[in-house]
Structures are given as structure tokens and as C-alpha cells.
Length: 344
Image (cartoon, rainbow, N blue to C red; front, top):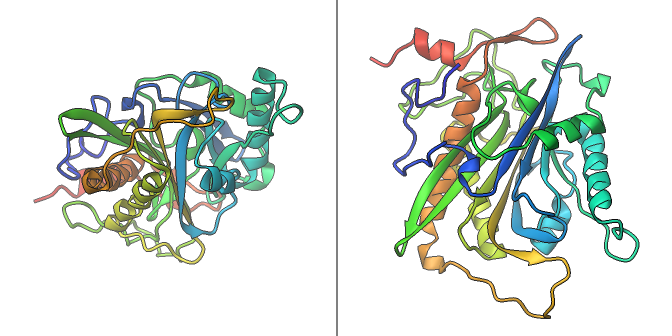
């Protein structure tokens, strides 16, 4: 398949990073475990903010819940304490427990004092329902599948579309899945990067709006909005906890540009973390100095979040091939639609 840009869709005006991916943020790594066959099309996607021990050195983070029809794990503590302490796993709705178990076991193996002489660990797992294509009742995702995705995580480029957690996802009546994009920012002479990864599984058929104003309509009936989308934003920009949530909220602007309106049965959320000034689990001092962007300069990060989110969803759609659902419904490829309907 191809990316949105390769198919002629240009999104926003900020420059992209060299990979146009969340892994343009130094230290961030991504891995997939794709599962298919016997009615199964599901998997796990892992995002590692840095290569070290996340429990010992916690990236600062925030959550913005756009519409809370979801079953993710770990969001409440991230919202309360402003840090993440495990990799972020994306999977299907019924895979959350298995992925949570995998994250806890790995953290305990690296830190045997967890839950004994120190605090428990907050596993962070986000989900979307891939039951339109995969047999979700099969409970196919197991802890070892999460381990496989985690072990596969690498910096650099990675596959998009119907891979990992995105294997069985759909959006706007088309096949969708995993997508990513990034934006470069220069603030007072310093260079920074913001990257987005989405698990796109939302939007009724016929509601998608392309950057050029076209509205692709797949050859199928419109359905009520009942999907979900997970947005993970990563940046190296020094931001405070409140600012991280404000940036996370701007992911919603990128989704809205695509035609999303966050229906009653849609679970839509954004997690934003920064690799700047991580928090030590056992600091030597009672006080820590943190660098923080002046609020008067934050609009560029807002714009980057909206643009990267919008393009990440379009990449998820363009990189995914046409697929038959469990009940025989056809989910076409947006890439095929674009080739058949060139802009005139």
C-alpha cells in the first residue's frame, strides 16, 4: 500500500520528521505482534518511550478522554500522577487483561521489589474493538503475544495499516488500523519533534473528509458511530503536566478535521508524553527542577498535534488493504478509492 502523501494527500503546513513517524522522537521505539488465521485478525502494538527501565525513570504524561466509551487500563493513575511507568500497549478490547499481565510480569522481573517494598506498577494498555473483522470472543491475545510485540520494538521505521493491534480495525467504512506521523517545531532557535501514533477504528461510512475536501463514500450502508480511536502523542518538548494534557486535547482537532464527531458508542482518547525531564522513582532529593515551555509559545505544539493526528489516521487508512469482515461485509481500501477517483 502507500502513505497518504504518496497518494497525493497533503496535510497541514508544518514539516515532518525524516520518518514521518512517532519514532522521529529520539528514544521512542515501536513493535508489532500481528495475529491472523481461523477467523482471527488482531494483535498487539507496543510503544516504548525510552529504552531504559520505565518504572525507574518515568516519562511525564497526561491523558485527555474525548469520549469515554472504552475499557483501557492504567489511564486513571496517569491522569492523577502525570507519569507513565510501563510501555504503552495497544490491542483489542478483550486483550487488555492479557497485555496488562504481560506488562506487570516484565516490570516485576526487572524490579522484584514492586508490590513488596515499593509501590505497585501501573500497566498502561489501550484498546479498540476489532470484532467486525476478528472473532473477539476467541480471546486470542495472550501475554506472550504482548511480549512478542515488546521484544520487537525498535527505533526507526515500522509497518502501518493492518498490522499489530490494527489488524482488525476499520474507520469510516474503510479498512484501517495503525497509522503514524510527525511534525518538527522550532521554538526560540531550538528544534523539537512531536509524533503521533493512532489505532484508528472510528467514524461512520460516508463521514470521512479528506484534506482536499472530498468525501469518499465506500460502497456500503452508513452505520451508527460505535468505534474508537486511540491517539498516542510523543514529544521531546519540555512541557508541564497541565500543558501535556492541553496538547493531548488537540488530537481531537485532528480527528474533527477528518469528520469525526465522537458518537455515543465511540471510545476516543489521547495520551501525550514527553521524553524531557523524566521522573525518578527513587529521587535523591525532595525537589526536582523541570524545564517548561512558556504558555505563550505552546500554539505550535497544538498545531503539530492536530496535523500529526490527522495525517496518522489517513496513513492508517491508506496503508490498509481491502478486507472482508466476519459477516462477509467488504471493507475497501482508501488507497484503492483514491487511485480510482483522482483529484481533477
